[in-house]
Picture 1 (cartoon, rainbow, N blue to C red):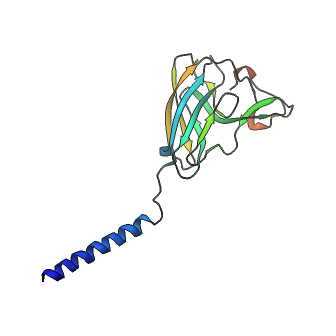
Picture 2: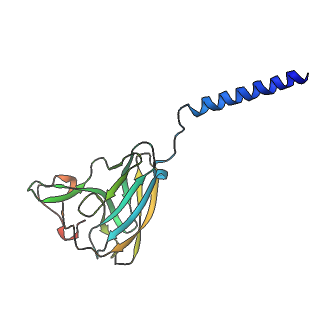
Picture 3: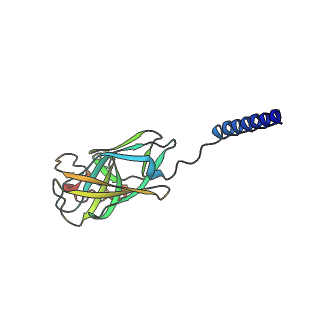
Amino acid sequence: MRISYRRGALVALSLATTLAAACSTGPAEPTGRQADSVLVHEQWVKAADSGMTAAFAELRSTADTAVRVVSASSPASARVELHEIAPGAAGATVMRPKTGGFVIPAGGTYALVAGGDHVMLMDLLAPLTPGAETEITLVFEDSSSTTFTAQVRDFAGAQENYEPGGHDPAGPVNPAHSG
């Protein structure tokens, strides 16, 4: 009886090892919400008294697939858009809504920078003064979201013109309050 007890234990151990190995080589479980895989660093907002301003940050993904930011919001403004900088119809650099949002590569970074892609806060509800902070919420393709706090800073650069919808033949709107 003692021998069969040991054989049973060995068979059970062998079966458990085989099952564990089979499970570890199978398909990976989903990592969860896209927002959970994105870390926000170096975030800040350009100071502005009214109109429009822009938010910048470095978005780092820990996901093993690309993630997409599709929209944003902030209690500091009535409207928020994801913007890109591109050549305008007249050859001048303009900012406009970024079709398709921001794609953060798997395990990579996506820079939101002055003079490049950024989050545009439009129709400010109150002045954003240097040293203050405001929250910004990013919404991802899977409808998950992450909120971060960004410090307001003085910044005189990146005076691109705004081209609503990306194709406004009437020209720039409110160029003094650009990203």
